[in-house]
Length: 288
Length: 211
Image 1 (tube, one colour):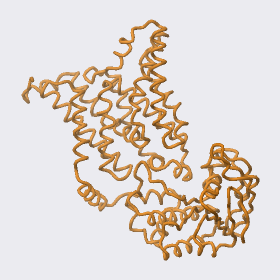
Image 2 (cartoon, chains in turn brown, purple; image 1 turned 30 degrees about the vertical axis):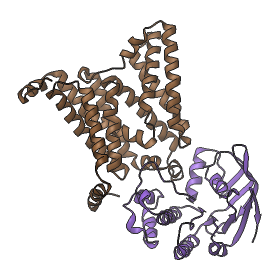
Image 3 (tube, chains in turn cyan, orange; image 1 turned 90 degrees about the vertical axis):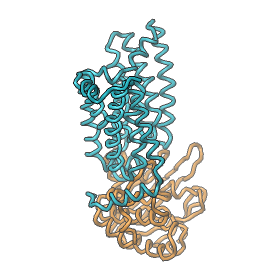
Image 4 (tube, one colour; image 1 turned 180 degrees about the vertical axis):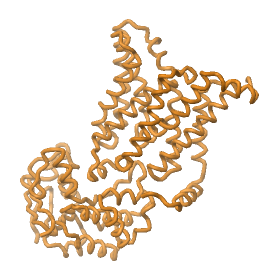
């Protein structure tokens, strides 16, 4: 393994692609873990796989029609997110829908690829982005997500908290449940699809789902879980990125392993220990 | 007169092919306290849920305060007009603080006062899944008091005293029946039934007047 000295890392950090990657990871650490909280809350963990396949279908349609394949992928994911929203009426409607979506999308994608005569491997290749190749347009997308997603949570936290707890309670409390579910699902679909393109399919879990899983154990309300998720996201992304630079390793797998270790570590902390942190945290005056 | 009237004509609710509520007609005048009793599975809970639009497969007419539910705006009005205490409060996939539950009624101060009176005022910073069944039921009752303060004219309570001890049942009944609203309460609690103005029984989806 090629270990770099601190001076070399400073040298590396002067390179524009490295700076962009660092910036992208920081921005991603603000928006994407919040999307992860929604994924955990709506119990739609397979969404990443579903969206990968839907994105592939979008790319296939793009290649067939001559439109921008990535744009088609994003639109396909947004439509798929909106399309499954009515299934959220029952408790396990959504998680089942994700499986169905995955099967249908891959079948349709393969059919379209076959009809269009495009090499399937070429279409798949578009799904494997890399954090070191993010451009300024990608940074803008991440910045927009970092602004829009936590902003929505802040503005609508009462409604989102009620919806993630219990759809019926939200309904009788006057939350426009169908509209909010649709909005959240489209946001999740577009964020996941965008993140796959920006960072590669593997990194999506590290940036989105894993911080939320760790936070779910540490927090005891939507607000504290969201705050923990963003905090863990920032720490994990910076640590993973610096470790990858220091040991000259590919950032994707290192970030996933760092985030995974954080989840494991949090689950190894005994319950009483976490409870005592919560008590201390709630001893401070809160705004509710 | 306080509270709103509830009127049902030919109400039928289905779960799949099974008809769980069959052709129910009911007139409840404003301010009346109605106990709805009957064996498990006789359709009581489904009927209450139908009023709030939580049960989807419903035929017939249900009017509250003379208003139907033809549009989304009318549904929104109906859900504001009817406070609800669910039979089995959801365990929840995601944590919700008791304070957030109380805030959801629209009259936080009154709901918090009610929580204090019901002995759960000190638990508001706890997530609901860490409360006992009785504490959770009191919290939902406090929320219902808040809903009434926020303008609800009907309280639909589904076994609101089932998880409570004897003194708790009496206390909860006092709070329920003191609210300036029409009350329809599904219950097996004899003391609560005794204190209602009117008693209805459901059997195999049909309703009959007992008292």
